[in-house]
Length: 104
Image 1 (cartoon, rainbow, N blue to C red):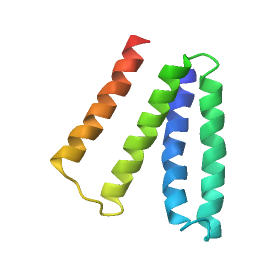
Image 2 (cartoon, rainbow, N blue to C red):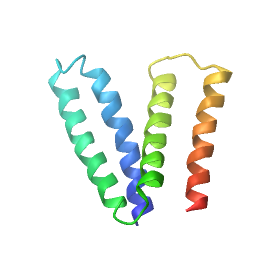
Image 3 (cartoon, helix red, strand yellow):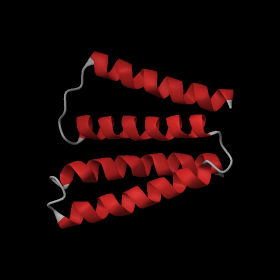
Image 4 (cartoon, helix red, strand yellow):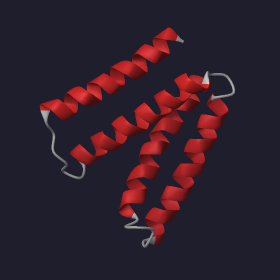
């Protein structure tokens, strides 16, 4: 169960990161609300998962999911550049996350 919660909380990290950018410096109430809810859900899920998982493994996987999710959102939805080097770097992050899961 800890792994499922960790993955979901990593996805919520993507939610709050995107909402933070959309808040335009905390000046837009709806994105600020989404940011706050996403942050609480993400942190609560991470805290729950860390009751069973090693902190290093859990944290890196949580950050990796959030980082890759946020970068993918930026490329797909916001029109950020999609380059071979960016995709390679994101693939390396995913590989590291999968590797940590397999080694746990």
